[in-house]
Image (cartoon, rainbow, N blue to C red; front, side, top):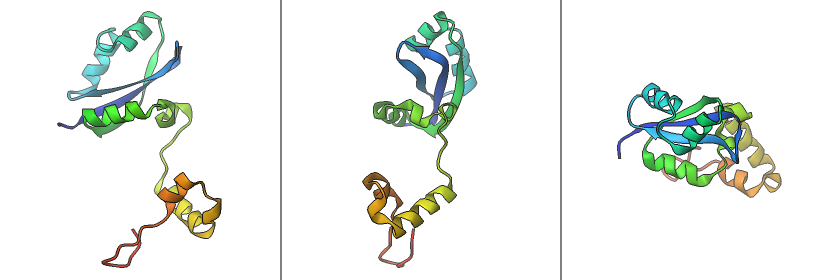
Length: 128
Protein backbone atom coordinates (compact mmCIF):
# COMPACT_ATOMS: atom_id res chain seq x y z
CA UNK A 1 0.00 0.00 0.00
CA UNK A 2 1.30 3.45 -0.81
CA UNK A 3 1.86 6.10 1.82
CA UNK A 4 -0.21 9.24 1.84
CA UNK A 5 -1.53 11.72 4.35
CA UNK A 6 -3.97 10.90 7.14
CA UNK A 7 -5.77 14.01 8.34
CA UNK A 8 -8.05 14.87 11.24
CA UNK A 9 -10.72 17.55 10.87
CA UNK A 10 -12.25 19.16 13.97
CA UNK A 11 -15.81 20.56 13.74
CA UNK A 12 -16.48 23.93 15.37
CA UNK A 13 -19.61 22.40 16.93
CA UNK A 14 -20.88 18.81 16.99
CA UNK A 15 -22.95 17.50 14.12
CA UNK A 16 -25.31 15.00 15.74
CA UNK A 17 -22.79 12.79 17.55
CA UNK A 18 -19.77 13.63 15.38
CA UNK A 19 -17.09 16.15 16.35
CA UNK A 20 -14.32 14.95 14.05
CA UNK A 21 -13.62 13.43 10.66
CA UNK A 22 -10.58 11.31 9.87
CA UNK A 23 -9.58 10.88 6.25
CA UNK A 24 -6.74 9.78 3.99
CA UNK A 25 -5.48 11.07 0.68
CA UNK A 26 -2.82 9.77 -1.63
CA UNK A 27 -2.69 13.09 -3.46
CA UNK A 28 -2.05 16.65 -2.35
CA UNK A 29 -3.84 17.45 0.91
CA UNK A 30 -4.95 20.97 -0.15
CA UNK A 31 -6.78 19.51 -3.17
CA UNK A 32 -8.63 17.02 -0.96
CA UNK A 33 -9.55 19.74 1.56
CA UNK A 34 -10.90 21.94 -1.25
CA UNK A 35 -13.14 19.06 -2.35
CA UNK A 36 -14.44 18.77 1.21
CA UNK A 37 -15.06 22.55 1.33
CA UNK A 38 -17.14 22.21 -1.84
CA UNK A 39 -19.28 19.56 -0.15
CA UNK A 40 -17.82 16.75 -2.27
CA UNK A 41 -16.20 13.58 -0.97
CA UNK A 42 -17.25 12.16 2.38
CA UNK A 43 -20.99 12.19 3.13
CA UNK A 44 -20.41 13.33 6.70
CA UNK A 45 -18.54 16.41 5.53
CA UNK A 46 -21.19 17.14 2.92
CA UNK A 47 -23.80 17.04 5.70
CA UNK A 48 -21.62 19.20 7.95
CA UNK A 49 -21.20 21.64 5.06
CA UNK A 50 -25.00 21.74 4.50
CA UNK A 51 -25.54 22.41 8.21
CA UNK A 52 -23.22 25.41 8.01
CA UNK A 53 -20.67 23.97 10.42
CA UNK A 54 -17.09 25.12 9.98
CA UNK A 55 -14.26 22.62 10.35
CA UNK A 56 -10.53 23.00 10.91
CA UNK A 57 -7.54 20.88 9.98
CA UNK A 58 -6.38 19.72 13.41
CA UNK A 59 -3.65 17.18 12.72
CA UNK A 60 -1.91 15.19 9.99
CA UNK A 61 0.08 11.95 9.91
CA UNK A 62 2.08 10.20 7.22
CA UNK A 63 0.58 6.77 6.64
CA UNK A 64 -1.32 4.29 4.54
CA UNK A 65 -5.04 3.83 4.13
CA UNK A 66 -4.77 0.76 6.36
CA UNK A 67 -3.36 2.94 9.16
CA UNK A 68 -6.25 5.37 8.70
CA UNK A 69 -8.71 2.47 9.11
CA UNK A 70 -6.85 1.33 12.21
CA UNK A 71 -7.14 4.79 13.81
CA UNK A 72 -10.85 4.95 12.92
CA UNK A 73 -11.51 1.53 14.45
CA UNK A 74 -9.84 2.60 17.69
CA UNK A 75 -12.50 5.30 18.04
CA UNK A 76 -12.27 8.34 20.28
CA UNK A 77 -10.75 10.76 17.78
CA UNK A 78 -10.88 13.51 20.40
CA UNK A 79 -7.97 11.70 22.09
CA UNK A 80 -5.89 12.49 19.00
CA UNK A 81 -7.12 16.06 18.52
CA UNK A 82 -4.91 18.93 19.69
CA UNK A 83 -7.91 21.29 19.40
CA UNK A 84 -9.64 19.20 22.09
CA UNK A 85 -6.69 19.82 24.41
CA UNK A 86 -4.70 16.68 23.62
CA UNK A 87 -1.05 16.90 22.74
CA UNK A 88 1.36 14.09 21.83
CA UNK A 89 3.75 13.17 24.63
CA UNK A 90 7.19 14.70 24.27
CA UNK A 91 10.33 12.66 24.76
CA UNK A 92 10.77 14.41 28.13
CA UNK A 93 7.28 13.24 29.17
CA UNK A 94 8.09 9.66 28.18
CA UNK A 95 11.40 9.78 30.06
CA UNK A 96 9.65 11.09 33.18
CA UNK A 97 7.05 8.32 32.94
CA UNK A 98 9.75 5.67 32.70
CA UNK A 99 11.43 7.09 35.80
CA UNK A 100 8.14 7.04 37.73
CA UNK A 101 7.42 3.49 36.63
CA UNK A 102 10.80 2.33 37.87
CA UNK A 103 10.41 4.02 41.27
CA UNK A 104 6.72 3.30 41.88
CA UNK A 105 5.65 0.38 39.67
CA UNK A 106 2.75 -0.64 41.91
CA UNK A 107 1.12 2.81 41.61
CA UNK A 108 1.15 2.99 37.84
CA UNK A 109 -1.91 1.76 35.94
CA UNK A 110 -1.11 -1.47 34.04
CA UNK A 111 -1.54 0.19 30.64
CA UNK A 112 1.07 2.84 31.50
CA UNK A 113 3.27 0.31 33.31
CA UNK A 114 3.52 -1.79 30.13
CA UNK A 115 4.45 1.21 27.97
CA UNK A 116 6.67 3.03 30.46
CA UNK A 117 9.01 0.28 31.67
CA UNK A 118 12.32 0.21 29.83
CA UNK A 119 13.17 -2.69 27.57
CA UNK A 120 16.57 -4.30 28.13
CA UNK A 121 18.24 -5.79 25.10
CA UNK A 122 20.02 -9.12 25.52
CA UNK A 123 22.81 -8.37 23.06
CA UNK A 124 23.97 -5.03 24.47
CA UNK A 125 22.44 -5.00 27.94
CA UNK A 126 21.59 -1.34 27.40
CA UNK A 127 18.27 0.43 27.80
CA UNK A 128 16.17 1.19 24.73
